[in-house]
Amino acid sequence: MSFLLRVVLPDKPGILGAVATALGDAGADILGVDVVERTDGQAVDDLAVELPSGRPPDVLITAAESVPGVQVESVRPYSGRLDTHRELELVDAIASDPEHGLTRLAEEVPRLFRAGWAIVAVREEGRSYRLADSPAAPETRAGDLPWLPLDKAMIVDPEVHWVPEPWSALDTELAAAPFGTSLPAKALVVGRPGGPAFRPSELARLTHLAGIVAAVLGS
Image 1 (cartoon, helix red, strand yellow):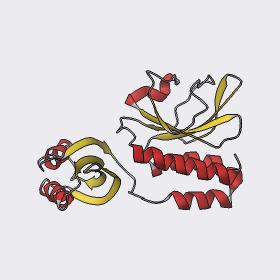
Image 2 (cartoon, rainbow, N blue to C red; image 1 turned 60 degrees about the horizontal axis):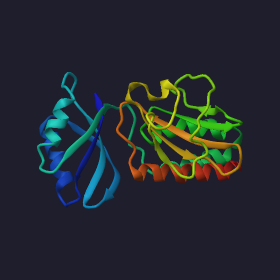
Image 3 (cartoon, rainbow, N blue to C red; image 1 turned 45 degrees about the horizontal axis):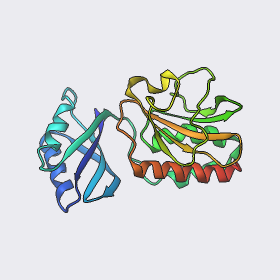
Image 4 (cartoon, one colour; image 1 turned 180 degrees about the vertical axis):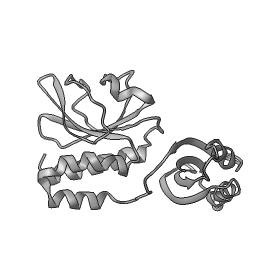
């Protein structure tokens, strides 16, 4: 079985190698590594790892945290690949077929951000609804998203920002970025069931991607 392991570790030479060794000693094979962010002497990395059938994912946490200074932020089943820097390929595909651009964006964003679903939402005259969504997006009735329009990307906290209840089910972490500057106000919303929380670097990526695609589509 494959898992995605998000680790926070000191940004020092040899630490990631020590984590890889510890995971190998626990029987895990590392399939790929993605640098999420580097800041203030710390690194946040996503590791795609494979465990032999029958081995519990807890061994990954124990192994990684046996390295001094390493903390495991989350472990979750993972069936994809660590495809980094694929935003430009998506923008190119959308530019080649703008008629289906919004749908393509919603379908591909979960893979790029290793999330569960994505929605392009719009708000006008006190009513909000979706323009496009990914296959796994939760079903909801049209309501309102009073926190639109957005000035910048943000973490959407259901205790502060009203969202339809299905959006926050399964301890889903939510992030949203403004999509274009024209009215009515639109946003790209991404849900990550079970976490981990979106990092500032991920919000920056989401902002850039939404802004570029909106410009390509003339939104």
